[in-house]
Length: 403
Image (tube, rainbow, N blue to C red; front, side):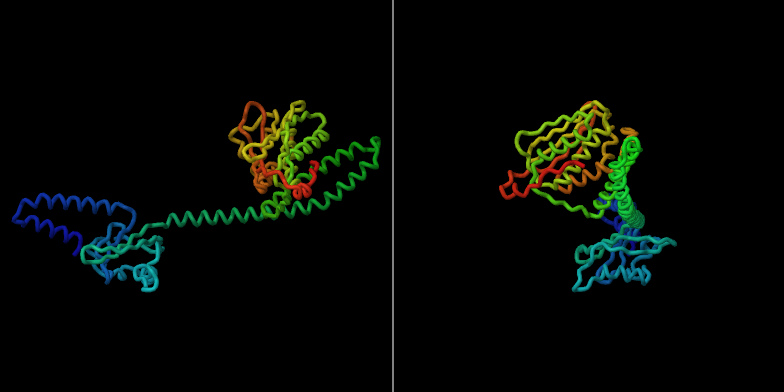
């Protein structure tokens, strides 16, 4: 019996009822039933109710009628299989007829062609009992657009990963190809600078040597990025006194930049961490180079080391123009150099990206401190460890000078 026929029979029963006192309550229940039916027809999910065990279709909401290819409920009341093409039914049958050994699968996907358009439905099937009868309820959600977006996102992700792999491969190959002739050029220029006097173009050769060294630093940065992206960075951690490392790096910079004033504050006791000495020097050197590069001659660069809450933290502060709030995160991205901060300063914008990666590989952090007036402050932190035993102390590496 269809929905419309059932409704008419209930109304007729009420009209013929001898006990007219029930008629008002019956009409109220019919109104509630009609309102509920309107809500079912308005939702986007298809709902199809079948009777077990024969899977005869009893009812469907408006979206369910579209799935079945029916225009109204009068076309129902026949086996579920008859509403679907054979290829569609093979997929649906596995969901509605599970074997005794295999439970009914979870939500599955069913492709349908309706009104000349291919749609994909996500199926959810449940079994219910009303009174003495059992029913199988099929709920289907149209996920065609969602799958299209997911496929587009996946394609974009794969394309981006392929581009990243190609970029990393190019950086690695190009850097290695540049490194060999550049090393030879540096050796020749160094020999020429030693043999050539000031009157014979020695200043010109020294200038060429400085430019070649700058180029060598850029090539090494490109190689370091390639190693990071291919997980080829090898760490050799040892027990080191960070206080000694910081002092040696600052001393080295005082020699290489004699016109700049470096303020250094260190704790009275040793500050032990477990880290790669060369990589710690690399991070600290990059922070000091940036402080010199982006601040004016005559302004101080402040370096201090503190121990707090199980962490050793190095602060490097300059009195440069500072970093705008909206651009701060950009500093730690590859090639994320802020041109307006240092227009005439050389570099590719890789130093801070490399330094942050090296800090994190050692269990530490490299951060840009909140602005306080003029200037910029970076913090480099590493986990503190207990005072090393005598055996560990004997193996402790000597601090390496910054190059």
